[in-house]
Amino acid sequence: MNFLTLCKTLARESGASSSTLTTVSGATGENLRFIEWVRQANRDVQSLWANWKFNFAQASDTTSVGVSVNSAPSDLESWDRLRFKIDGEAVPSIDYAEWSDFGAVSIGKPSMVVVMPDNGLMFSPTPDDIYAVTGDYYKRPQDLTDNEDIPRIPETYHDVIWLYALVNYAYYEAADEVLQRAKDRLMERLPRLEASQLPMAHNHAWSNPGFVVEVS
Image (cartoon, rainbow, N blue to C red; front, side, top):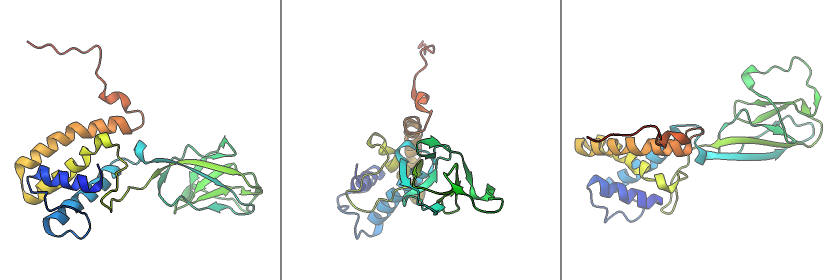
């Protein structure tokens, strides 16, 4: 679903008419609220976990001779601190608050990465040559702005977005029946998304072959 379709789905599922919601640009009144609820829901779902698979990315860069710090990718939310490599060799990383150079700055092939407060990378020792630097990271939450914008969340689970938004709509309208329906459905679908898109969680949605439900 694109952004506009998600908004129209929310309007329909809320019981309101979606016939007047034809664009996310310039909307007013209730239509604007539907748009903002979907936009915020998309951000909120992405923010539930820092390490969603759909936000995973890899950074590739090179060092410069005599330059100790490289800037972070523009879309970075957080680094995977265990996945830095210099010229293909894994190197440890520490937070800047834990780091001390113990005196004079040394020059050589970096053997450690220091993550700076702004998420830039400091290399220790300061590079004496050009080295390849790679690292895994997770992107910051995506904003939906245009009609055709597609959420990063896999399409199979786009209903989680409008269900999340529907909960907020129901709270706003004090619509208890809609609220219960949305929460019940969301509690079915959100764990499915988590099982699909969180590391080491893929078995959470699998049945247990040794467990049989007996119907009397």
